[in-house]
Image (cartoon, rainbow, N blue to C red; front, side, top):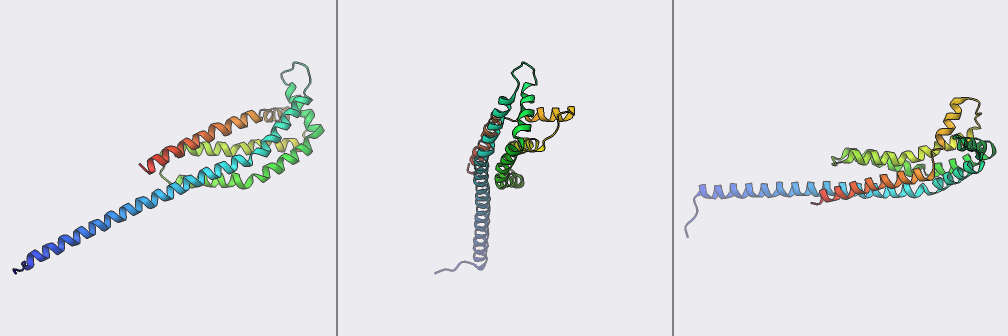
Length: 207
């Protein structure tokens, strides 16, 4: 049996080594891609979980905001003054503000863990190169800000501020715009934006 020349054997060995190196490189690149995809998918799952937990935690303070809103209406004068609702808020604060504000504050404090987790996930998402994450981040921050809006109402309720000062009057007027309808709308709109982003990003990760 004839033997291959040493030069041919060397060429075969070199080719085999090159093919092996290429296969190893391809496998490493595939593994890195899969690992990144898994990390991104895990983040998206955690983001949705954090958002749902936060929205669920808002249920009690949002209900209390609705009760406060009903109270503002109940105490409002029956005249047609454009500030009747504000005067109703002032009367409600004087009559029940301290107790109502305390209970609202307790409900807000109970949701602090969830809002902190949501903000942390929003910040973490910035390390990924997600397409369209800027809009998603804005939606997450808007969601988180709903708790801040309710905290402002709680602070005014507990303040027992006098209304002799026009600046104070205007500040009280500003919290009368914080109602269940506006909060529910913000939750619905921004949750939809986040979920649409997650859906589109999943499609890009596993395309």
